Length: 219
Image (tube, rainbow, N blue to C red):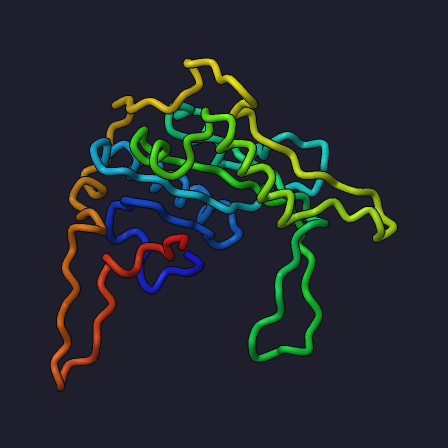
């Protein structure tokens, strides 16, 4: 998992998280599954994960990906929201630090932004049903990815998910629904916020604990 300092799946995710898994189908599906499990397991702890995933398609007409991870999104609409598709022409990978003179690399696929959380998580971090919140989100994203009409190629605009503009039907609001059987292996995982870091001694190297490792939290 990009941004993790250890095994991102050693604990249940709580609070706000940003997940950018490796760009392969298995890693993307694992991240979405873990976000869904974490939202289901922590109904009383605000849990909200923003996922940045490849769509495995560069077609601007594709509304949302049919990648394997969308299986989890379609099965659990009560805790998953499609937020945004960023066309491949609008994102570039910056060169690594050891190659500062290299050119930026274009992505092969569009990028999908998903939100997964429980009711408390959405209320605290992205209450999209409030018009001013959704409008602010769209405005900020448009500022980050402006439509550049001057590059000489066909402009591919941002595509927004169906979370609603203005008033939102109550049926599409997030709900805490116990409709998934959590595997025992997942149930045994501690919450990331419940783990205490180990205190290193003079003779013991510092150990990164799961509480610090699951993901970089947005600031």
